[in-house]
Length: 249
Figure 1 (tube, rainbow, N blue to C red):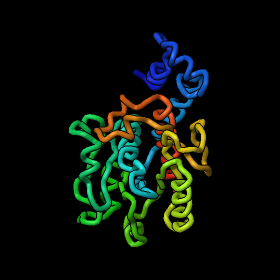
Figure 2 (cartoon, helix red, strand yellow):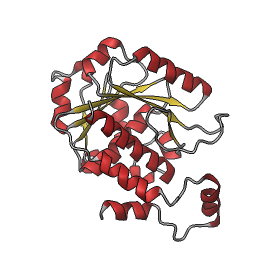
Figure 3 (cartoon, one colour):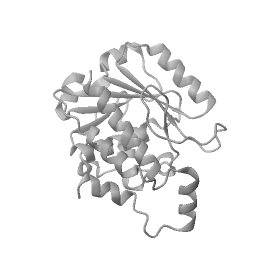
Figure 4 (cartoon, rainbow, N blue to C red):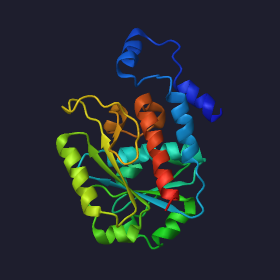
């Protein structure tokens, strides 16, 4: 099945019940007519060629921000679009990554570098070149020395879409400055955040919002087939933005 057919299948409205139609008409998120075009364009950008390895560091602005589950979901969509060649690893531990990946991650084109990078014998560049794209789970604690070791091309700062979460994301962004590559500020929508309902979507230079998804918020393996359409579109576009920034450096 080609990209266009997959995208059209995602947005297929046949058999849509009344509740789903009502939700789509109110929010503009579910099954909207731009979805196939947005996914196709995102998948094209996710396939941008890489001549040498690229490294993307996912950093949590606070505990429970959803860094690991979101990293695994993004890696899954990138591997699907690129036909594999995507490696994930943890800075200090890989146990959470292993859990969220599940036992069949190899079948999805994903590779887990099982040795935490702070203890890896290979150089970070060697590890990332092996599969072109390396996504690193830094959890919510990382030092300047560790970031200098990772030499990331892109840093994704993840926080919850609350007043406190936004403040913490912005504080980390200011502290990082321009020392470590491009920075994406990512907010995960939470129910009852008190900030109103976001419209979703990706815009460079602004805060990126991933709509709330029960599958990503739950304590279970991340299966991209179970992710809701609004979250899927945003994560695909996040992957595209990551690739655009990574290959430009």
